[in-house]
Structures are given as structure tokens and as C-alpha cells.
Image 1 (cartoon, rainbow, N blue to C red):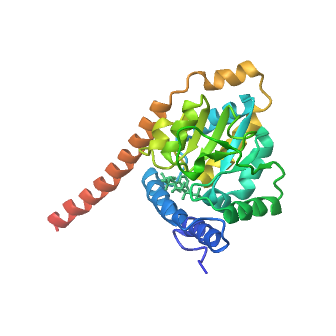
Image 2 (image 1 turned 120 degrees about the horizontal axis):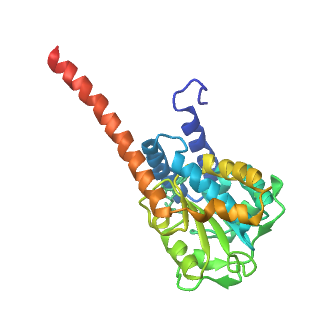
Image 3 (image 1 turned 30 degrees about the vertical axis):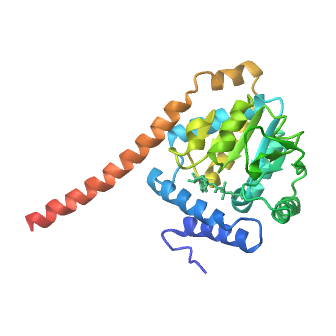
Length: 259
Ligand code: PTJ
């Protein structure tokens, strides 16, 4: 039992969700490693949504609303961390949830679908009757009416190969990845460098606000967006945080010398 007073309560509770996901057969064991990597980057960006991530989340909401056929890709980590939030976003932007796993087993696909359904999800795609060209791993298997036919795909916690392959199919790819250096982050159309825990509710909040706008106004929201700048700002934020940590240590050292 983690006491609420623990200074890292939120982070530890998030970790518990992933562990529970593994125990319930929803999350793959590799998901634990991915979560650890994510936590490290979250620490470096200050465990908060940065200004540039908010901007990317707003653009993501606009792109999902403008899409002809948007789809939200769901893996084992995402299903364990933000199931309710995904269902809400799926309803808001009218995008089905498609279970697509890197370490795919039919058993885990079925468990994730049952989990999402038990929480109220109605629009779930599960067929794997099409293949993304150029991919040799299990993530190539997609639904012919879902990711295969989609114009905009939201891919949280993705591997770089599929992101590239989806772009080559002419799709808009929105990635959520705390690591601005990852191949996915570098190649996506819109990269949200934020924790999925904060990112999905933020996209939903923006989608609710933007839903009332005309198409032209939505287009205005995305017109000036530059993903390279988003990545640059995320890396700059990490640099800033590291410099301020270092500066604090320098002050302590100066003090020690003086004593
Ligand atoms: O359920 P499966 O089989 O589809 O597998 C899912 C994982 C996530 C295990 C699989 O896609 C994988 O191995 O991913 P990677 O290559 O480890 O990449 C995951 C990326 O997501 C890394 O760059 C992490 O920094 C990032 N990440 C991890 N946790 C979070 C995150 N980004 C945002 N929010 C998080 N909570």
C-alpha cells in the first residue's frame, strides 16, 4: 500500500497500473521496461505538460476532428494506463479503438478487448485481415476497415518502424511519446512529448472546445504547426531542467568550499 503522502505517489500509482496490467494479462512484460523508460523521460521534462506539448495536443485534437476516418491504436500499456480516457476520446472524436500489439498474442488481444468492453467501449475494431506494407513484425496486422483505411491514426507508445510505414501509406500519424529522441517521435506528423496519463485527457479537453468550430477555423488551428519545433522545444525543456539541477548542485559545492 502506497501512502498518499509519498512524494512520488502519482508516479508509483501509475507503475502499479502497469504491474496490474501485466498480472491481468493485458500488458506484456516488455511493457514494464517501456514504462521505466517513459518515467525517466517524464522526470527530465518535469512531470508536467509543457507549453509545446499542450500545443501539439491541441493540434492533435483538431486533426482528429477534421479526419475522414480517424482510428486510435491501443496497445497493452495504454489499455492498462488510460482505458476510460481512451473510450471518452474515442467517443468525442468518433474514432474506433483498434487493438494492435507489438508482442501480439490472440489471448492478449481478447483480454484487452474484454477489458475495454467491460468499461463501456462500444466502438472496437479487432480484425487482422490486412497488412501494413513493408513491416515484418506483428504490428503489421491491422483491420482493413480500421488502421489500414484510416487517414489519421493516433499511435500512443509506438515503435518507429510502424510509424514510418503508416506515413509511407500517406496517413497522418499522431504519436504520444515521452522520448523526443525516439524514432517514432522524430518521424510522426504530430509528436506529443507528454505522459499518456496527461496527454489523452488534454486531447479530449481540446476536442470538446474545438468541436464547435467550423472546418476553416479548425484548419487555422493546425496551419502554423511545425513538428520539428515541437521536438526542439521538448529537448530544450530537458536541457533547461538539467541545467537548473546542475546549477543547484554548483551552489551547494560553492557553499562547501566557503565553509
Ligand atoms: O502491448 P504491446 O505488445 O504492443 O507493447 C507495447 C510496448 C510499449 C511495450 C511496445 O510498443 C514497446 O516496446 O515500445 P518501446 O519501443 O519501448 O517504446 C515505447 C516508447 O513510449 C518509449 O519511447 C517510451 O519513452 C515511451 N513511453 C513509455 N511510457 C510512456 C511513454 N510515453 C508516454 N507516456 C507513457 N506513460
